[in-house]
Length: 140
Image (tube, rainbow, N blue to C red; front, side, top):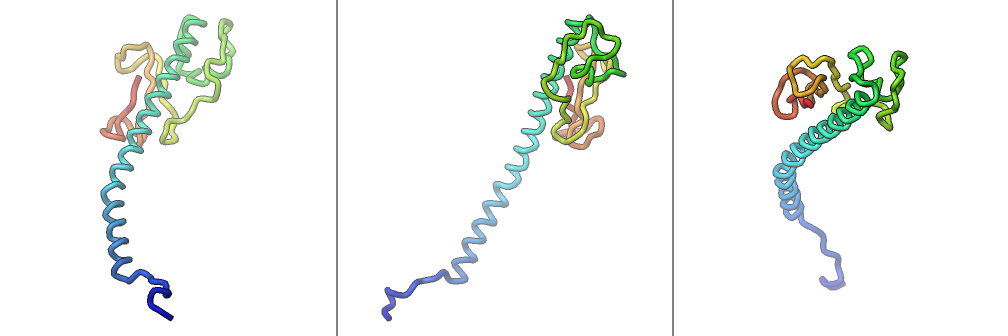
């Protein structure tokens, strides 16, 4: 059998070089990819908060006031017993959890003097007030 007819395999050294190159790529790209995931979760939370705020404004236009703190965001999906002018539902689906699986915080009246009569926020990845980066509060 001639040398040309035999199948040529990879040497151990060639395989180690390929594995090392893949490892370097993962080490370089991995952290950038993970940081993009965090940014996308924050952007998703901002978009959901904006949508909830618009639904709250629609509720106010119909009823003349925002839902009480006791009624909460659930009043956007189900008619509260005391709301004769309710014309919802104001959301097509149930109130979503934030991208980290926690409930959005709705407070009426606003406790921080925001531009709105209400507070609507997510506490970020850590689920605790304050923080920075991905752990920062996302407010409306």
